[in-house]
Each structure stands twice: as C-alpha cells, then as structure tokens.
Image (cartoon, rainbow, N blue to C red; front, side, top):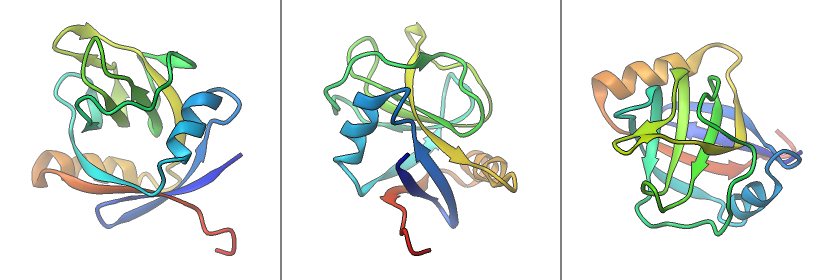
Length: 141
C-alpha cells in the first residue's frame, strides 16, 4: 500500500492509494506526484470539494467506480461525459455534474482520524478555494 500525505489548506492528512482496488488509476496518479491544485466546493455533489481539471487525462478507464463515496474516498473522473476532476468528499456525497449522476474511480482514501475534513468543508463554503497538494509520505515520519 502506497502512503501519501494530502495537504488541504492548513491541514495535513495521511492517505493510502487503493493499489489493489484501482491499480491503474493509483499508478497513473502516483507517477504525477507531487500533484498540486485548488480545491473548491462541489456544485452538484453535496458535501465534497472538487478539483476541476478540464481535459487533463490520467489515461485510465473505469475501475473501482462509485457514485456514493464515503468521507475521504477520493475519486478520479476522466474527461468525456463531464470534465476531468478529482472529488474529495468531506461528508454525504452523491457524485454528479450538470449532465447528471457520475461515477468516479475510488483510488485514494484520506484518513480523517479527528474529523478535520468537516472543517475543510466549512472553509470551502465560507472562505472559498483551498490549496491541495498530494505527496508521497515520508517513510521516516
């Protein structure tokens, strides 16, 4: 299992790539680390942030896809039916866009031991976009 650190605004989370459940998506994402972007409040998906990526493509198809991710279950959606994006749920989520319900590859799980993802959600709603950065975890930490 590949361990990552996910930094969202002032918060840092441990995370695990879903190497067994989504091996192609996990490998493609890992090859692009570190990955930095802006996380904004999702418009149609409920309690989630999203990283809009336009036509960015990891080059993988559907694997381990869901429309109902749990808190911390990060999804990858390739370009096509809707734009490419990462979805980062911080609460109750049904993955959707203006074209309707979507399914994304659950390829990464954020460990939210102290409930800080809920605070990320509050900040997205009331303060706006937050920086997000994915890096390989320091094995000595």
